[in-house]
Image (cartoon, rainbow, N blue to C red; front, side, top):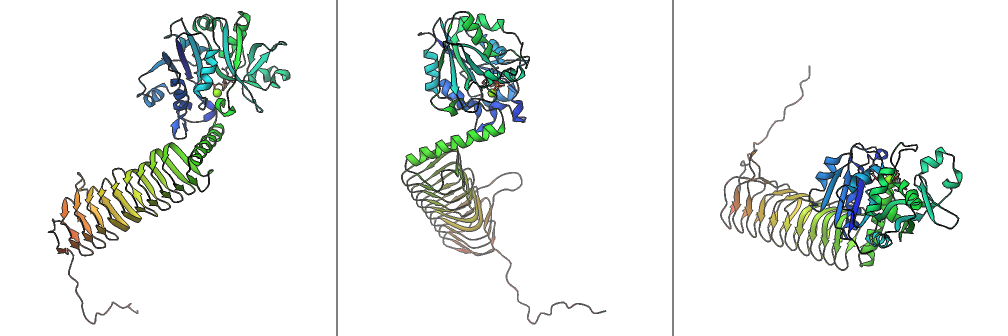
Length: 462
Ligand code: UD1
Ligand code: MG
């Protein structure tokens, strides 16, 4: 049936079982809201219209998807069940065509599975995605007649209330995903009644109507069971998170990345790896992270929106965000690179060194306990232990410029705005407030005084 496709995504439910103030469809899975995952599969079908039915936390959900201009938003209030949500969602859709209904809480559904389901629909055929699963608890059961034709769906709670053991024993579950001719759906949905234990309008009741109306209920099945796993509570969310992470790890392994333990890596976004990358245990990758060839990431590092050049080693316990690192650099252990840190080739950043909004030229080194903020650091600069740029005057930020080949001693304070001239040396413990000339030794500290034969105070004896 070659007609226009519209999609309704049901996302108005409270998600009571999550026990959270955050709407269910915004709960993060692999670092992205649940809804992002199913919407990506829906978008691959290139539907004429995608209608999002929102209700609980509608404003929060809309705000989270403000960038998605292609979505049509419909408010369901109050939330009287999935059948009511479908009816509300149908309002902006025209009659000629097919409507695909997707629940917002089945994040791993693949676009190929949705496409195969839609293919089954014609004027006389309703299509339902079902799956045989070992643990059917909580799901609607697919009831077939003696000939194998689907005649209705019975919700778990209703079968329980009726003590209907035969229905409870059915292992074919409703995935909540279905497709139908739009005109038929529009005529059917107003006929739903809330005569069930939840007192709601069940979308699932349209199956019995389709069967009674003489439509064939065709079924399709997902390739993997995880595709249709509904996320209703934190335990299901956590189980799916592991599943997604396992799949991410497998992809990395197949791409030739060495993972110390595929069960101990978390990718919450996109991780792009070159050849011969090594990742030790406990690392978290957030946003878009690129690791070029031969990069090694030590244990327990967190990298967010970062690009790391060839042959660079990030030692354990380092936290890198919004930064780029050149080739052959050494970072950490216990280093912190904050947004705007741009490090050249062969830069060394050691333990307890923080770099923010600063560029460091090739070969620059800050090996211990230091802060570089709003600084432009030249090539081969050596920045001593305990030194900092005092970049903030309480109101404004100022820049520090450290030209090529400068040596900054230990425990220096460079009070910005200030420029340290090329090849200069700053004596340890200096507080530098004025620009220094190239090639000079600059010292700004109290002169040492020695008092001979100094008598320390003694304790009074009473
Ligand atoms: C539903 C199905 C069940 C199926 C299961 C698959 C019904 C009655 N039951 O049960 O047969 O096995 O999904 O995961 O359809 N929603 C609204 N408005 C509402 C109520 C719900 O938009 O008034 C949305 C929810 O946000 C959610 C989806 O519909 O995304 C499903 O609702 P949920 O409460 O999770 O239904 P289940 O009990 O999982
Ligand atoms: Mg559900």
